Image (cartoon, rainbow, N blue to C red):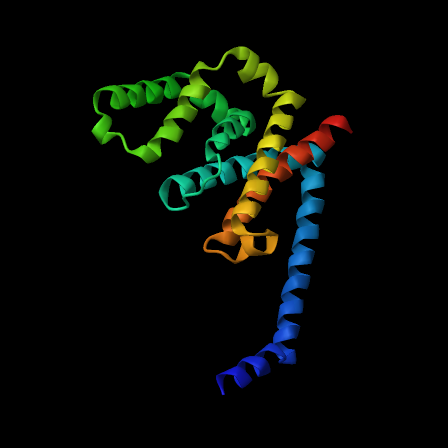
Length: 202
C-alpha cells in the first residue's frame, strides 16, 4: 500500500507543476542576479563574489573535516587555498597586529599548554601563522597574480577528484551524509579560480 502511494505521489501532475514553477522562479532569480551584478561592477564584482564564496567554502570544509567529516584526503591543502584566495580586506587585517596576536597566543598555547590546545585548532593556527609570516613574494605578488589562481585551481581539482573517488563516483558523492554540502563546497573551490583565470586572460 505504501509503495502504491509513493508511486502515485511521484507521478502526481500537481507536484511536477510545483517543481517546474519553482525551477522557473530560480532561473528568473539567477538571471536577475547576473544582470544586477553586471550593472554593479561587471566581471570584477563576479570575481570578488566568487572569491568570498570560495574562501568561506574552504573554511567550512576545513571546519567540517576537523569536527565530523574525517576523510583520507589531504584537507591540509585547504590552508594554502585559503591563503591564496582570502579576500584582501580580511587578509590585510589578519596580516596586521590582530593576526600577530592570534598567532602569538596560538604558539604559546601549543608550546606550554598542549593539553588545552585542541587538535581541531591546529589547521586554524597554521593558517594564521602562514598569513602572518609569509614573505611579501607570496603575500603580495603571488596572491595577486595568475600563479596563485593556478595553485588554487590545482588544489580544488585535486580535492574534487579525491572526494569523488572516496565517494565511489560523482553521483554517490551527492547521496552520502553531508554529501551535497561537501560536494558543492569543493565545486565552489574550483569555480573561483576558473572565473578568475577567464577574467585575467580576457
